[in-house]
Amino acid sequence: MDVEETRLPGIGLRHDLVTAQGRRVGVISQRNGARHVVLYDERDPDATAATIELTAEESEVVAELLGAPRITERLSRLREQVESLATEGVPIEPGSPYVAATLGDAAIRTRTGASVVAVVRGEEMIASPTPDFRFQAEDRLVVVGTSDGVAAVGDLLNPR
Amino acid sequence: MDLGHTAVLLLELGAVLFGLGLLGSLAGRIGLSPIPLYLLAGLAFGTGGLLPLDAPEGFFSTGAEVGIVLLLLVLGLEYTAGDLVENLRRQAPVGVVDLLLNGLPGAALALFLGWGPTAALALFGVTAISSSGIVSKLLTDLGRLGNRETPAVLGVLVIEDLAMAAYLPVLTGVVAATTTGDALLSVSVALATLAAVLAVAVRHGNTVTRFVGARSNEILLLRVLGLALLVAGAAEAVHVSAAVGAFLLGIALSGEVAERIGDVLAPLRDLFAAVFFVFFGLSTDPSQLPAALLPAAALAAVGIVTKFGTGWVAGRRAGVGPPGRVRAGAALVARGEFSIIIAGLVLGSVPAAFGSTVAAYVLILAVLGPLMPRLVDPWVRRLAQRSAPPRSSP
Image (cartoon, rainbow over all chains, first blue to last red; front, side, top):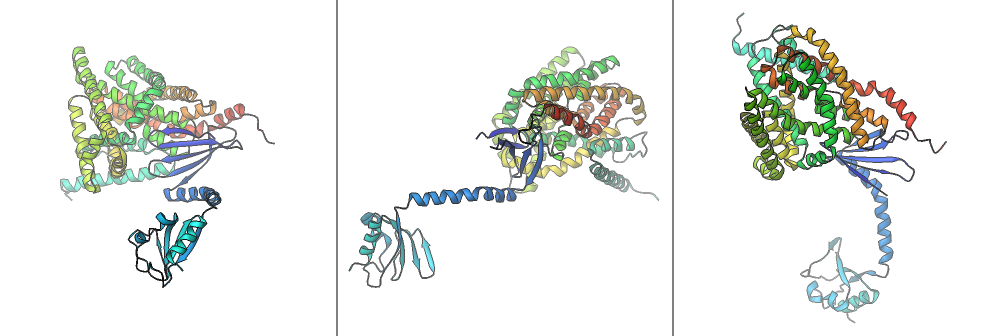
């Protein structure tokens, strides 16, 4: 697909393309953020048949509407790719040797290969905890890694 | 009742500005550019007009100078140096065709009427240059910014504005000089200064922008306006012309600051540009207007045809079909602020008939210009039907 870019001196930029159906569509980006969506005439391809003017905010909404389904598509493809990864909640039981220890002390990634991406404490969620984060009993760690790695985290934190 | 001088001044000024406001809204309602109405108002208020006013003359003559500076400064703000260089590289041949095609008839008429070489040079400029203000507003109002001939039309406007930057110093040099040797010297000084300033504007725009930049709009306004008047005054002193100085400053200012400056200056520009058009009307003798009507109308008729020629050439170069080429020509017909600026520069050194002819010429083309695209619409539609590819689906 070819997108043609044309400078409009004093106004901004125009991008236009011909769709698979043979219609020409363009977007004019003005320097002040306003956008015009332009539909070209079928019989006279140099003339505009209709122009819709969008404010900066409106054009963002339209862009989201046009872009959102594609983002969902991409996310699901990503999820398929990482299917071999396991995500699990691992609790810190009251008898664990790591109650009151820090995330850095536990050296979980070095010892198991799995990563702690978040900690759930009661109603609260702490995303991306830092190495000086201190565990409490009943914390629930969200761990990502291979299934062996995730199991190893459970054994490490709550040895039997 | 004996009114003091201040009272008369304020009353007359207020009446004029309020009247201009009414005329402006009238122009908007009937789809006209306000420029011809401002000119008519100036003719009416001047000596020999319907309602001669004398008190605000001083305000109008100073305001008109400020108006030129603001018009050109804001125009320069819209362009970046990159826009200009790229356009010059791509559109130069179209620019040459446009200027010669449209300027030569004007020069020929001035010589034919025996007004002398200065008037011929000035009338060349008056007829050559389209009104950027009217044309770009027209394209926006008609929703034609997306049309594929529009970049070609805007390209012609940019080239014309650039050509103005070289033409005005030549004209002021010729007006200021008394002998041919004098004229050559002052023109070359002016052009050398112009080249130096343009190089600074292109290369060191960021420094200039940082120099005027301020967080408060009030301070920004004062700094920019002050600097613009300083640059314009200095340019005038070396015969580069105040308008060109302001235009170059506008080009040098760039980026986000330039956009803010444009917003801050817009209302001032509107006020003083209106004052400028009224002042040109004021300094034209309305009793000369009927005699000027015939040559002006003939010149306008030729000027319409030659702008269609420009549009055709520019459109073809841009790969646009015949209907688009006709639309491009129709869009370019309007003449306005530049023609008046050029005429204002030489008023003192040419026959009085010159001023009234230019006034009539601009009155005609500033009114017809915005109507032209609608007038040629049936023709464009016929052309489009003839050149349309056969429809693929029933």
